[in-house]
Image (tube, rainbow, N blue to C red; front, side, top):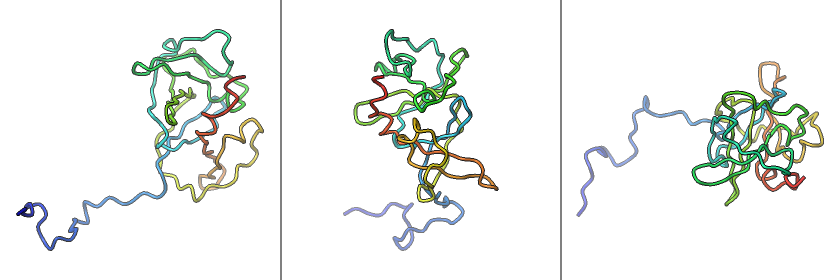
Length: 176
């Protein structure tokens, strides 16, 4: 016979203390980040393997590769491609790699991992995808990789665009 441990006292119901209950956040957890033009984007946290700040000299350039690719990186014994996400999305200005550290977001789908180099990380946020709006004023080079956008701020003038990481990973643009 198994007896109930002391910490489960009471009627057997979930008798939690209200002051210890955490308010349930709305939406899903997303990583917010910027590309060189200071446009802000988000990716769902579920498809992100990790975010690393690394010295650009840890990325090995590969000759005759797509200009979108900065090179390869050894990530815990696994070689992955690192791309300039801004240029992938059609940004004219290349990412500044002449700095001490650069953020790279490692996204993963099944056995495919790609490092997306960005200008800066904005942090993690709970965002509700039910409030996504269709993207507006988006360049044709970026449109296939967007799931939508949120309008933020008091005047709803700040735009946060949600990227489709599966579309990015499966894109034929990498071959160019």
